[in-house]
Length: 75
Image (tube, rainbow, N blue to C red; front, side, top):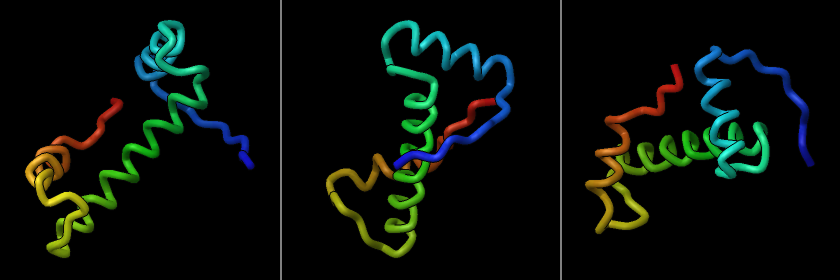
């Protein structure tokens, strides 16, 4: 199931999305945006695990810290 939403994005972000879609990185604008939101959600989950002293993959704990210090900024 999907829900249709209307979002307003800055021109440069919309251009980036359109560029990536035209290059074949995603099948549509919606797919590209959904991927970015999923990525953000995954970072939040990993950060929450880290804050509780847990990790899904102990060998990658440093990578989680590295990613948490670099939030996704589309502006």
